[in-house]
Image 1 (cartoon, helix red, strand yellow):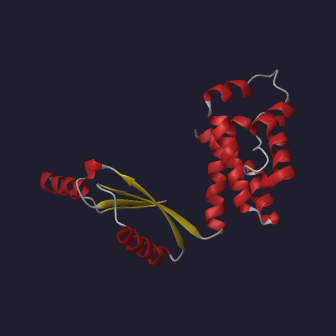
Image 2: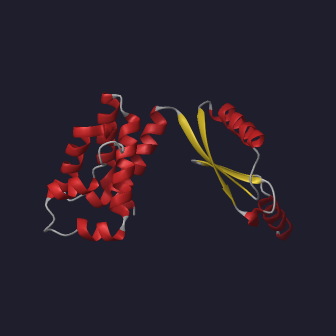
Image 3: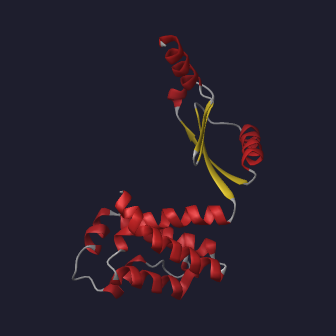
Length: 180
């Protein structure tokens, strides 16, 4: 996995540079997301590894259809052609992930996942979002998930920062403290 990330990093930086120069972060995100999703499909991954597949056919397969994220247009098609020429199309999921990290950093956005035992009301999510915005000094995009095993409270995962305010986590910390 780390080798794939190492190989994908320069391509992600190149895609990010093109998108930045064009002022087209969102269209490139959509196009890369589409191509990464298609490339991650096991049937397509097998096909991409076939040396009989022409580069132009691979680019056509991975390019979004008109009206479905095709705003990146010709530069994105040239990017895919470069990947095909270098036999790096299988790296598209990693490239897309690294691109999103670069985009979030450039747009000063922190992506956080709030996992709770039950569905949180909108007012609680707004409070969490405001607190994270104060803590990080950046805009915050929040995704939610439900995990009943947490019993109560929530776990907030914002990149390198994990805040475990769940009842399950508190019980585990108490158990560890009592064991020592």
